[in-house]
Each structure stands twice: as structure tokens, then as C-alpha cells.
Image (cartoon, rainbow, N blue to C red; front, side):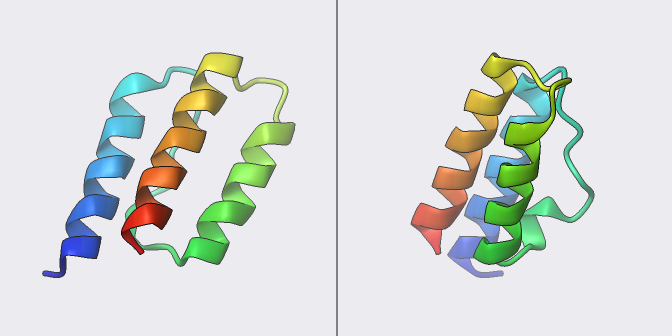
Length: 68
């Protein structure tokens, strides 16, 4: 298993543990950076997602992309 995969899985798991209004898709940690960025854009436009959860999503995406 590559270091990148471990970092992505950890970021996805941390996001699942810290958010309440955000649905984390299955396999999120296996997505390409482009897919993750597209998902984040969709999350930003979702009125049901709290500001705090969107911030957590941004942080998780940044951690994944930094590991790329």
C-alpha cells in the first residue's frame, strides 16, 4: 500500500468522524484529485451542509491533495 493511499484513507476517515451534515461517499479515499475537487464544489453548493462541515471537508481534501 502506498503512503498516498494511507493518507487518503486517513483523511476520509477523519472527515467521516468529524462531520454531521455531510455524506461522505464510499470510496472517497480512492478518488482522483479531480474527482475530489468536483465533489467539494458540489458540497459547497449544498444548503444542507453546515459551514463547519464544509470547512472540515476542505481540510480533508487539502490533506489528500497535499499527499498526491
